[in-house]
Length: 193
Image (cartoon, helix red, strand yellow):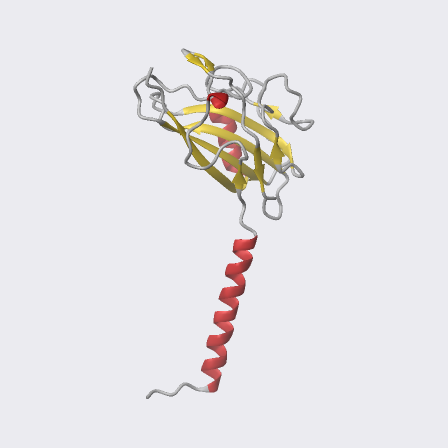
């Protein structure tokens, strides 16, 4: 039987304790996004479906809630993106940025262009529907259900500086350049007719 020295045992115990402590701290500080309106991997309801382009939904943005971002978070951005849209570049359904650092939720229908439910200074960027504000799901008839990725981004800057008519891709570039962390969930939606 191989014997280990007391020093090796102490060193191993210290490493194990440190790893456990670090693991629990990392888990405790995990950045998470959730919604009381939409469960992850669920199907979007008519409330989150676009009203136009052949779709007849209510076009209401869901309520979203997230845990505080990591140290150094100065603002947040929220995006909704469909990677399955037959465009070659996906489809941006919602782009919200310059959310103050003390924001940890958005109310249902905050994405309405005239709701007034967003914090002061927050900007809604132009979506691929061509206007600012939430644009619900509206995949082509007969496509397999599309994925809608809801993401909150913790940013290291208070403001993203882009032109008022900036594309979602440009805003996305600035989000990625300033991101400290992100949290996402995905829901699906398809149309048979």
